[in-house]
Image (tube, rainbow, N blue to C red):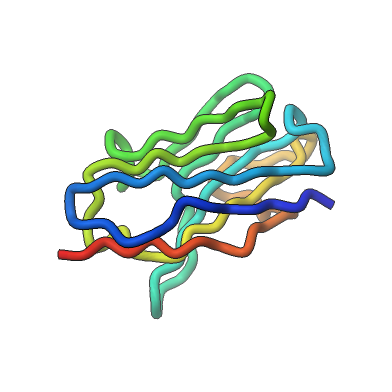
Length: 125
């Protein structure tokens, strides 16, 4: 098991910034792919970004490139999602996910074995 705890969501105006955090425990952090997904009301969950905790490789969804940055702190077993230039369409519940590095698959397409409880991000117009 890899318990994941997200924090950092909230209400922000258009153009503002938020930083989400996801703390992992249990399994060696460096053996994980850590990802962020989001789900807006009435929409399917969608991939946002992921990072390989071992080598730092990142993969972003096209709609967040240049605005969001995923990063990790292996000493703290924590992954972050820095979100800048937020838009109302970024409003969603953001979920942290983790997958063992050993598993194969492109980061956006993995099933991810472990999920956090989600944190709400609301961007007002």
